[in-house]
Image (cartoon, rainbow, N blue to C red; front, side):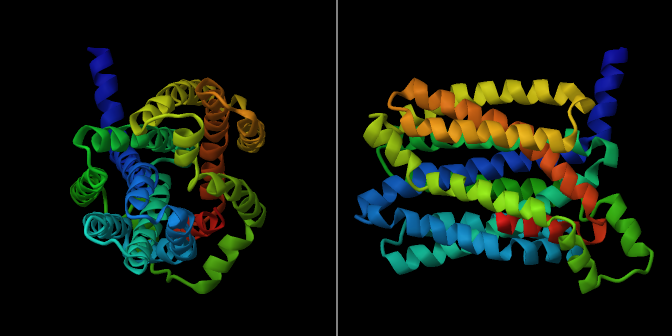
Length: 352
C-alpha cells in the first residue's frame, strides 16, 4: 500500500516533468529519423547525396540563429504555444519532403524545420526548469536527457527499419509527420501554458526588459564557448555518420540502427547510475568529466574500422554526454531568472 501511495505521489508531483520527458523523447526520435534515416538515403535516391551536408547544415544554422529569439518568445507568451506550433510545422514539412525533388525546395523545407526545432528545444528545457523545485533541477535534467537519448538511439533503428520493410525511402517521412502530430497533442492537452514560478512573476507586475536578457547572457559566456566548441565537433559527424556506417562498416540501414542499441543501453544504465549518485559530484565537476570522456571517444572514433569499435566510441561519447549535459543545463537554469530563462537557454542552444 505504501509503495502504491509513493508511486502515486511521484506521478502527481512530477506529472508535468513526465509529459515533457515524453515530448523530448518523441521530438528527438523524429529529428533523429529525419537527419539520419530519412534525408541521407532520400538524397541518394534523387542524386543529391553530395548536398547532404548543406541541406542538414541549413536546418542547424536556422535553428542556431533562432533559438534565443524563440526562447525569448516563450518567456513572453508561454511555453505551450511554441512547442505545439513547432511540432505542427515539422509535421507539415515532413509530408512535403515526399513530393519535392529539387534543392531549393528542400532547403526551404529544412529552413522551416530549423524554425520548428528552435521553437521546441529551448522552450522545452525552460519548461522542465520551471516544472520542479530548484534543488531537483539536476534530477529533472537527467530525466529529460535520458529521454532525449532514447530518441537518439531509436531514431536510426525505426527510420531504417521502416524504409527497409516498405522498400521506400519515403516511408520514414510519414512516420516523422505522425510523431510530430503526437507531440502537438501531448503538449496542447497535457502541459501547462506556464510554470507556477513563471505565473507568479507575471502576476507581480514586473515587465519583461531587454536588460534582463543582457544580464542573463553575461552570466554564461564560458558555457556558451564550451557549447560552441563541443557541438562543432558533433556537428561535423551528423552529415556523414550514416554514410560512414553504410560505406565503411558495410551496414544496412537497419544494421546501423541495431548498432546504436547497445550504445543506448550502456548510456541509459550510466544515466541511472549518475542520477543515483546525487550530490556526490558537483555540477561543474560533472561537466568537466563528461566533456573529457567525449573528447576521448571522439579521438578514438578516427581509428575505428569495425562495428564493435565504433560502438565503444559511441558509448564513451554517450556516457560523457549524460555526465555533462544534465548538470550543464541545471547550472544554466540556476544562473538565469525565470523571466528570461528561455532566452538564456536559447542563447546556449545558439552556441551549440
